[in-house]
Image (cartoon, rainbow, N blue to C red):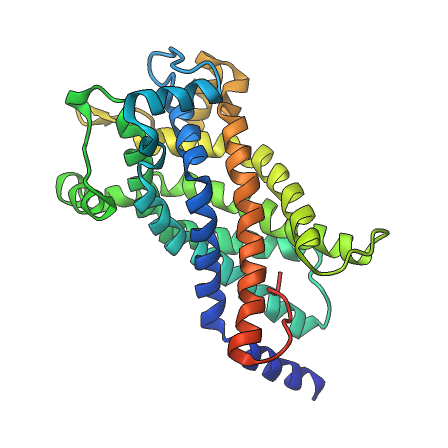
Length: 317
């Protein structure tokens, strides 16, 4: 009887559809702030591909080069694709994870274990990555276009022009090029990010610190979650970026798969090249993780307060 009442409360307070909508809005808001760092990370990962020649000395040199060659707005190249990616990928992953997390709590009457949180993160990541791969392909190409010689640039007008031209010129399946490493990366990212955020948040709230629900708790949990996620996911992110930006020579792709990318990068550029762009990646992923979760928590509070007229029950994470 108590379980049925709790299920009714959850359904009344936060419809499943809103879990997806609020997740997407949180991700898009965070992306507007950190897009320049994502572009720098992409440029640094592509730097050295093929020839092995480094184009940038460090993060700041890369940023300075982009601004000097393409102007300040060059740092926001591909923002349309980035927002579309959040509207598809983040909407799906956060919606699925929040739904599964709430269902677990209702069914088992307790917070998820570490293993359960990791499992839900893997499922949410795979679902979100598959839905978001076309926008990811467009984003990688648009973000890297400025570093190519003028004659080789694709010059997409916007994200929809990119998707249309890719489909027309290279076939529909090209929109899912790199989907396997993208899904693999997303599974690792979400297993690390969502599960660790839930566990860090539970520890800070119920452990020795006894932190109360609020922005301070959300900030601490999300910063640690972002660091752990960066370390574990960067090699797969490198592989995903190289595959999605690869060119075909005589009909043959530059790379056959994720393992070949990782092997060639480690062999020709050094093992630590797998974490090339770590600083902008963490500076992007850390704040993006923080902002996404804080935005999500705040949007949930606003929904409860202004739509339902009741106290917030949290984001469900």
